[in-house]
Length: 348
Image 1 (cartoon, rainbow, N blue to C red):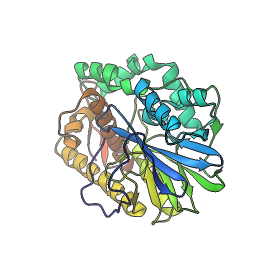
Image 2 (image 1 turned 90 degrees about the vertical axis):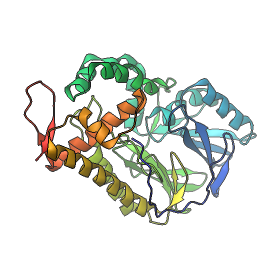
Image 3 (image 1 turned 60 degrees about the horizontal axis):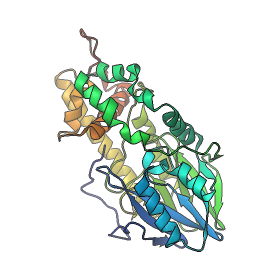
């Protein structure tokens, strides 16, 4: 779930984002633009990299008619006269991969992404009805969600996952440690977990630029969620490990080009801030569970006291669950005895 960062040690080369369809050069041959989203987080950052006689694209926006019109305006406007060479997708969330199929088909582009991103998106696209399946509904109910809210989350809370055009039938796999040559420059591929499995980031050593996707964002923490398909998963543990790997592999003074909000300097500081943020969330859960056992649903208002719509509630519930699973693995919490079949946790 999104959370504002109030005391940041970051600096920002641009205090204003580009308007829709406007390109801003962030480093030689690397341009930034934005595409609107119909959510509380109302935009996604898109990057274009000069690639010989054309442009490589990084991420797409969601799969709807408004986003198609924006891309058509960009291609016929700022990019006019030069071809599109390839599409690189960082992860399988619809705001990043949603229009990949359409762009690849319309402009004859190869799709480059991680295997998990491709297969994860393909699974959702082929079986959208599975989001409302009985095992998934039971998962929410077992962790304390009331039937009416289960209906809301299952029917409305996951609608965004369907905002994806059909993917190409093949793709080019990118693996952590690969090097992509784009426009004569080398970009090192590294992947992170927690927000999305095998999320792709690209680091250009010659420009000291990190295309960080949603792994590290300046003023919000990326959503870290447990989903019903992997109910015992530990995405928060994976995310914290990924932050440590980023600090070990990328210089502290790199320019960070994130998937949302403003580009920034201060990568290592931001990684530390994000780790501290999640430690604080765990402390709130520990305090509540020291008083009495709580289900995941009981803990949602502990971390998210404001009113949530179905879309936000599905993310909030899943993020709370990620903290609970992390704390269970670490030994801070344990499963409490249950007489009603619902799962609750208490302080260990």
